[in-house]
Length: 81
Image (cartoon, rainbow, N blue to C red):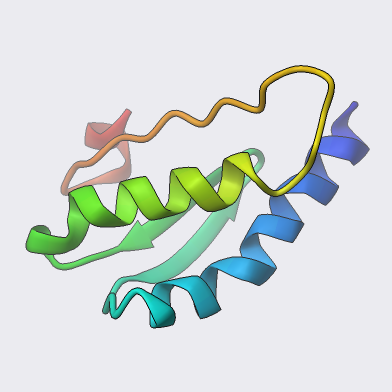
């Protein structure tokens, strides 16, 4: 299972920079930790970024079960959980 999950998040990570640019966002991906991605974003972009990332990550693979992404926003990684 971990290998499949790793492949899915990598697919999303490859797609995200182009999507962020196309959406006109200044946000940037900073870090991957297991099944999480950490971004740095201007406060006014945070909600939009969360929606864009959710859309890209949920469409990174076609599975027989839903691929559900949860997002969090905070000044620190801990606060975003």
